[in-house]
Image 1 (cartoon, rainbow, N blue to C red):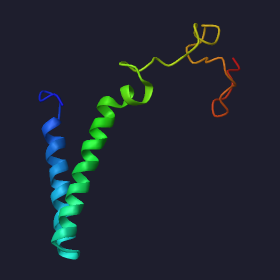
Image 2: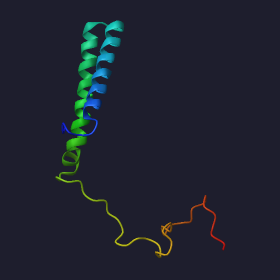
Image 3: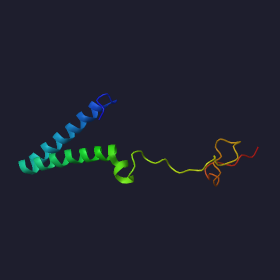
Image 4: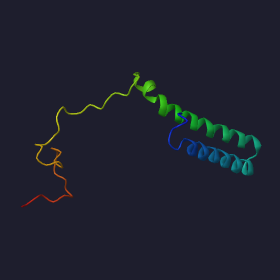
Length: 98
């Protein structure tokens, strides 16, 4: 987490409010022990999601950087039409009869 990242403190504040709200609701309905457990699980979920977004490519692919998507060497189509993808015609787009 870069402290200079855009909106970082807003995201942290919203997550803290969500954890506090979950704890208060659990405290009212279930009791102190359940409220503490729910707060702990909520924080753990946020931490695990953050770790997955930060280190997921290293854990699941075994490389430092995510591998680029394999794609064709050249652009499909003949190049005359920028909307031409080389695939089947789009059924929602009428053919050009000029």
